Amino acid sequence: MKLRPPDLPSQLIDVTDFAALLRRDETLSELRVAEADASGIRLKSAVLQESQISNSSLSQVRIEKLHIRDCIVDRCDLTASVLADSSWHSTVVRSSRCSGIQLQTSLIKDVHFKNCKLDMANFRFSKLENVIFESCAIAEIDFYHASLKRVAFVDCDIDRVEFSDSTLVEVDLTRSRIMSVKGIRGLKGACISSEQLIVLAPYFAQEIGLITKD
Image (tube, rainbow, N blue to C red; front, side, top):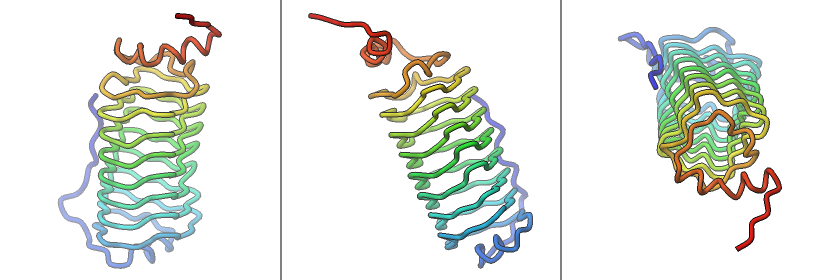
């Protein structure tokens, strides 16, 4: 799958007090943020574009309307951040802790999550299009009633992931390991391997009320 990569300018502005800039409620662009601490910040809205954030803490932030475009988020902590109803475009999130991140009712397009801890992340009612999850910990991710179009899971361990009432189009699971899923009927439209089908067989049998006996 080919994603639209972040389009960053050749020159970025180094930022020392990222939290203060966020509180201004202005569009922030062309920034280089490193070693920043904005954990626990509460904002009505934030717009960030064409920027790079690295080695920074954004844990437990709460932003009611976040718009992020053409950004690289590298080695950051977004644990338990509340970013519902946000929009993410052409962004790379890599080697970051995103456990329990709240992204329900969000639009996520051309985004690459790589080497991220995404366990218990909430994508309920979200729309994901052209998204790659690569080498991520995704146990107990919640895709309830989400729309996934052209989404690939690469080298991930899929365990207790919720797909109930989700809509899947061109979703590739073949390059990951599946242990268990919830809402097996929601996998309609996904591509799985024959080996994965064997693992999922008990869940399909349970869904249709099939009784097996040896």
